[in-house]
Image 1 (spheres, each protein chain N blue to C red):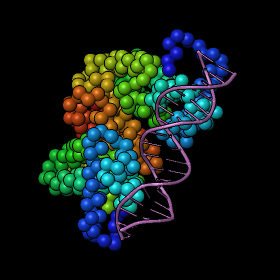
Image 2 (tube, rainbow over the protein chains, first blue to last red):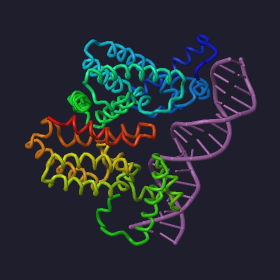
Image 3 (tube, chains in turn brown, blue, purple, yellow):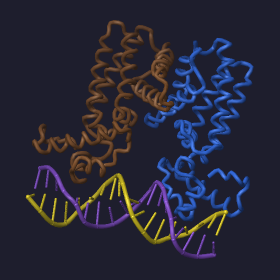
Image 4 (cartoon, protein in one colour):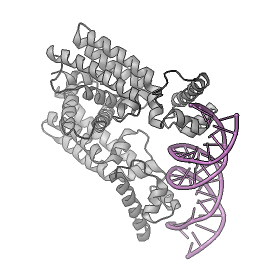
Length: 189
Length: 189
DNA sequence: ACCTGAACACCGTTCAAGT
DNA sequence: ACCTGAACACCGTTCAAGT
């Protein structure tokens, strides 16, 4: 839920919500991407119905989990848009998008799927889109990027890189930098 | 199962197996990536146990479903390795890998995960790896590809592109060619 | 208002019993 | 040998009943 009528939750409700998010995060950290809502309810010591009262479903829960990472990424995108050297800015934006997704599976999941549940996530998406557009516009004018790349391409391609990095055997720390380099060179005009 | 002792199945067993594969394919075609084994058993008109007798699990079933596409891709890789113009060969290989994955979700799933269940799939993977290596070696000598790309990078990057293409709203037929172009340019030395 | 947990449908997986 | 399907555990989702 988005709590449209009430900005602050009742103290106990907020505590219960935090417990559910913590339980979900613990499962994600343990490598369980399933997020079974029944199990989370049990972990958090609440009834299943309470999970559904706070989150419309698995997708909405993921969006809540990803919100912090999403905002952090947006801050980095804003910095990139203001970078005096826009080639640098573009590289920083793409790298940040990839790293944040690798650091937070929930963010990776949310960015991978176009249909988001919460209005808040929708707003974050628009904000990131606007900032990305600013980076792309400046980059295009500076002649450091192909003309046919739009903000959603950056989202999709970085989601793809995340997938490429994760689909490897674990032992390959060089992949991130190599794949970033491949993408950035490929984006040049 | 891999039927290690028997190359040909008993006629009725083969029929039952074909029915299960058809049911699974129908579900995939309908956009259901879940492949619930119970539901497939019901669709195919067999007991659940029969599904488990033929396939060790969901993963093994996926590998059986993907085998034809996989072999077709290998044929294209072989042609690429023999292409007199190795820059062409490289492009054809990457494009084939992407297109086959987009055409067959089962192949996309199998290529995305390193751990395969059936020995047959393992053999197909080795074959594709060998052919890809041949393409990369020739491309490297011809100076048309970066030196730090290994066959598994091609697998991972094309899996990533598949993901990037699919994570878009449906209405974007241009994405495939644009992303292929980005990747191929990015792979240049 | 908010929370609980029983209830139902469904899926994964196993295994004793059938042919 | 191969197949069946009941059985058990688990998860998604809803909703009447509690506080």
